[in-house]
Structures are given as C-alpha cells and as structure tokens.
Amino acid sequence: MGIFLNSTAPFEAYKITALDKYFVDKTMLIEELIPSIGREQRFLCITRPRRFGKTVMANMVASYFGKAIDSSFVFEHLAIAKSPVYEEYINKYDVIYIDFSRLPENCQTYEEYINRIKTGIKEDLLEEFPELELKEEMSLWDILAKIFQKTNRKFMFIMDEWDAVFHMPFISQKERQEYLLFLKNLLKDQVYVELAYMTGILPIAKYSAASELNMFVEYNMATRERFSSYFGFSEEEVDKLFQIYSETTIRPRITRHDLKIWYDGYCTASGEQLYNPRSIICALSDNQLGSYWTGSGPYDEIFYYIKGNIDEVREDFILMISGEHIEAKVQEYAATAEELTTKNQIYSAMVIYGLLTYEDGEVFIPNREMMYKYNELLLTNESLGYVYRLAKESERMLKATLAGDTQTMAEILEYDHNTESPILSYNNEIELSAIVNLVYLAARDKYRVEREDKAGKGYVDFIFYPEKKNISAIILELKVDASPEEAIQQIKDKQYILRFKGKLAEKAKYTGEILLVGINYNKETKMHSCKIEKINRNLPQAKETPSFDK
Image (tube, rainbow, N blue to C red; front, top):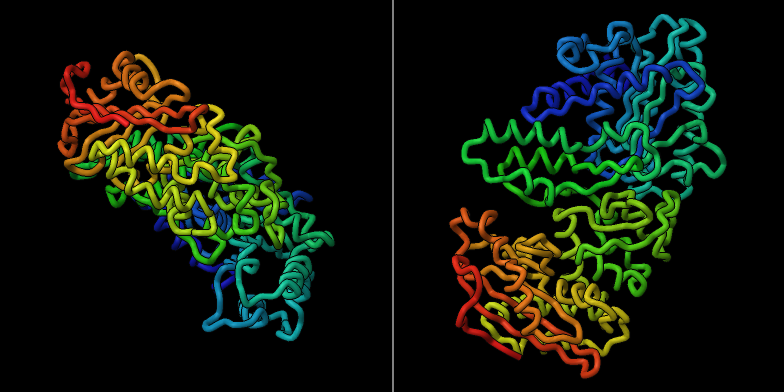
C-alpha cells in the first residue's frame, strides 16, 4: 500500500462519508463508469463548482475499484450492490489516486510541487514491483510502461482537482504548460491506462490548445446532461435528508422551505435544479441556516471577476440582487481567460465557480446563500460607485422606514438619481423595484425579504418577514406615475396582510405590527413620494390607522 498506488486513504475518507447520518447514495455513478473501462473513451473529466461533491465521488470510485482494501462491507448496503456487474468489478484494480491540491510542506516552487507527485508514485511502484528492478531515474511513464510489458497489469487513474495548479500563485504560465505536458506523457495513448477519471472546476480544453489533453471527454454542469444527478442534491434527496433531520434533531429550527430558498437553484443542462450539498449537510448538522460557502484564494471573491469591467456589470448586479435574470452567452472556455473583460467572460467564470447559475440563456443568483455574497460585495467595494453609495444608505433607509420618516426615505431614493445610470430612469416598475431592493439591502440582516410573494388575492412587490425580535413586518408596494396612497390601497384591497396569518403567526419573535409602505416615482417631476401606515396583524384591513406621508 502506497501514498498514491493502492492507497487506503480514499476508502477511509469515503467510509466516513457513507456512515454519516446525512449520507446520500450516489454509487450508481460506478455502473455508468464501467462501460468505459479499457475502451477508447476511457478518459473522463467531470467539472463542477466547488462544494458539489467532486472529492466524495472520487473517493467513492477509488474505494470501489481499488484493490487496496476489501470495501464490500460498505458497498454491499448501497445501490451499486444491486447491479449485475457489482461483484465482477469491486476491488479488482490497481488505482493510482492523485489529489492535485495537495502540496509538499513549505512548497514554494512548481518543481517541489510536481516532484512530490512524480517521486511519490515512483516509490510506490518500485516497492510494489521489486522483482522488476525498476530504476528511479526512469521517467514515470516509462516505469509504468515497463510494468505493463512485464506483468500485463494496467492502472486506473483517479485524479481530483486537476486544475489546482492554475490557482497557485507561485506557479508561472510556463510551468502550467509543463504540467499539461506531464499529464499528456502520463496518460495520452498509454496502454497501461485502464480508466482515467478526473475532476475539477475549470474546463481542460482551454488549456489543451496543443491537444495535450484532447483525449478527455468533458462533462460540465451547464451544457452536458450526463452525470448531472451525481453532483449536487435533488429535491427528493433533500426531502429524505430533511425527514432524517426532523426525526433525529432535538428542537429542529429549520423548515423544508428554508432549505429551498437558502441552498437550491443551481441548474443542470437537463433543466433540473440542484442544491449545494455541502451547505445542506452543514445546515442540518448544525441545526442552523447560514452561509457555508467556503474556499481559498482570490478566485472565491465575486469582485475578483468583475473588477475588469465594473461599468458593464453594475446595472446587471442591481437587477440580479432583486431576483431578475440577465441574458448572457455563457461560454465555458471564456472563463479561463487571463483577463475577464467582457460580460460574457465574467458571467462564464461566475457560473463555473458556482457564484451564478445559468438556464435558458440567462444568468441569475441561485439562492440566499449566494445572495449574501453579493450583499458583501455591494457594501464593501467603493469602486462600484453609486451602487456602493446606495447600498451604504440602506441601514439609514430601514431606520427611516421603521420610524415613519417618509421625508428621509424620499431623499434617499432620490440620492444619486441624476447619475449616468440608465436603470435609475425607472422605465418600468422592475427598475424601480431594483433600486428599492438596493436601498433596503441592510434589511436582509433582520428580515427575510421576498419579492413578488403570493399574498392574499395577488402578488405583492416586497414582503419583509422579521427574523429578529421586536421589529415590525413590512409590506411594500411600488408605483410609477401613480401615488403612494394607491399603492397602500392596493395592499389593502388585495389583502396582502393575509400572508402573515400562517407562515409567521406561530413565531414568537414576530411583534404583530405591520407597516404598509407605498412608494411612487413621478417621471415628470422626477420626485419620489412615500406613505406608511401601521396596522396590527389581527385586523383584516386598516381602519383609522396612523399614517406618515411624504
């Protein structure tokens, strides 16, 4: 047993996963891989955003096929055990497992990085085949070729995070090309390769301009349907996990609806929506909703992608944080450009990294977990100009609303209105809604803000559901070239208040007071006007309620 050859580490990692309370059985991926073994199409690369289970699947594949340890006591209870080929393939192969994200201690150069892999595999092979008198000074691929010639033994290569070198700051562009040549020499046209299963985030074709890795068939989430069901959690899988959570958790604090709005929304090429699996498991294990999106390196930050073209994406971001979808041509290879300068390049990169999702020619923010990332961006980057300034006013806007200070509300809405931004011309209620959403950004720390929520007899523009104690709920309706009084009357006539008679009625932290907020923009005068009425949740409609006007 070696570090790379027939290592027990992938099995030990997968065993921990398989024994977890919130384990989801994805073992039928193995049955889909079996027809590729020993065939021309035996080079498979699956790319997905981070935290979508790529490493878990790599560990699973290595654990099933690898001969390092008898893994049947884990797999015999899983779905793959029902396959007619289960016994034929389990624990039958020599597996070389490489996690390309691992570094030697105090690594500062590409040579140190790649020598750990080359030397480690060579040492494992020399130890496994002492009778062949292999020479360590031979190239790795020559050693493997000689083993095949002498013993007829082939190898499966399970490789995780193949693109890690493209995120390491100490590795140069020239050295990245050397890395691609290393993979080519190791794998391409080599008869000793039984199967090459590789995962990562970035597409490989962009980096194979000279056809180094063109033997791989790539499967991404946005455009390729195959393997979609094995990465991310489906509705049915989350249903089962939530049932386990409900039955085993003392005082559960998460609802099934919470999981959907927080972690759902990633789209596959087949049109299925998927949940971020890591976030689901963390939330259920912790019995707490939150942002579990983590990573390392500057490529994890939204600003990293947009800094090359802030002007073009700024208005799109205002619309996207309001829940709108933006037309885009997502090209997988564009995401790997050295400089992200066009909107399509920027959005391509953000889709590949999971910061946006893509469906039917449009990009959008998938869920609340990602929305918090965008909130951070808008509140911390002054280079966003008026967008940053409006977002920074959002705390003052919320305080003014809760205090009934309609004059301050109107002043904030008019703040920076005469900028160069076309979105601030309010050509329709969608644009007005986008700006209102931006100036209430800080409210998301205290409220669950839902837009166009089904309420009473229609759809309301915004409902602010309190998630903190002793604060009022808010129903907000927008108008263009009408009046704030008409907006409030619509709230009453359509009985939007009924939205609180179930979802929040049982929550002790809700005070019972609701603010009805009407906002209107007059295109001719270019002025905003606001009105607020207070109402108690127990009243079907407001009668003789106090109001504040501007």
